[in-house]
Image 1 (cartoon, one colour):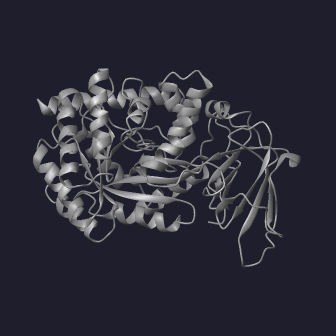
Image 2: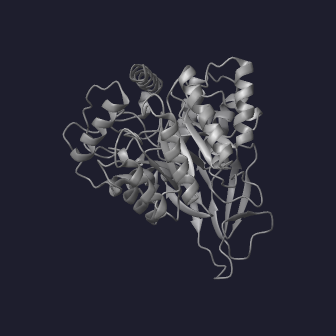
Length: 460
């Protein structure tokens, strides 16, 4: 029964995800059939290059070594009607006058928005930037994981380079932090953890990264996996230990959770479990996760991803579950795959449950879609929620920015004094229009330093 339900779940979720992505497929350019990598795709609604008069200009910082100060003048936070100047001192937005000699960056009236957080992404699997990959049919987790292994061996570019390329692209599109799920299995040993760890170090000036050791091939059904997870946690290579469908895939609810929560408890790492299971099966697993979290006092350290058993719950049942999740300090993530599988974010947050938004896989063996652009993912969230009102479009953006920040324990970048100076500059009318049109990211700022211009990393 479990095998059958898992195959149906994965097939449906994958088709739903592709359907959602296809609706805005213009943003997902493919690679050339000749085998040479095509230019990286630009988001839908990209404006032409600005004229000379409209380009962002910079004057150097002359404050010396005492403080690193920059004034980003003539910008419109969240699309405000009137431009203001944002003064940044040592990476923090200041409410005080700028120090004499501060660097000046003229935003020319562009909108300033907080950079976003990708709460669920798989950078180790990606074929982003590689020659086009023709994918084989698959309809169950086991079949998809077998395709993962084939792709891993087929790609010529080392994993660490592919991961860094994708993660750098995410930065250039306005991502300031991500939670990276990295496959841990005997088929790979710890190559993925090491590769993404290398990419994290290379991009540490621009991107915060949490690494999850993800047992994609199963914790129990694949011998040797739990030992690899233990080693990764013991050596500090991962920040969280993952899990996957304890009943529907691993077919060992208690033993699966014994391993995952045991590692978390012994080594002081967090937990993030993929839960694709639906209906009663998913609720049984979710209730067991809540119980383990409370028994081991891991409140605030556990996340459940996807959680396809939650959408569609009757209101009373959803409210009871949300209250229990909030009491256990368990957060959730969604990748906005479709209208019937996206989490009821507003209702969950009313009860105090944090919900993050993520990219999931990016051009991997599971799907040819994905672009690691969290502004685009906020657009997709608004699309599947059938957003029409300005406040609904703004809420989708907040899910990609503030929701992920809270989930990763980061300060919200709200562009107010005391906030980290993590923001992006785009041309546009207002925030709702930006979410719909997805203009080019003209500049990305991290801790007051410019880390990307016109969709490309700088100083890297």
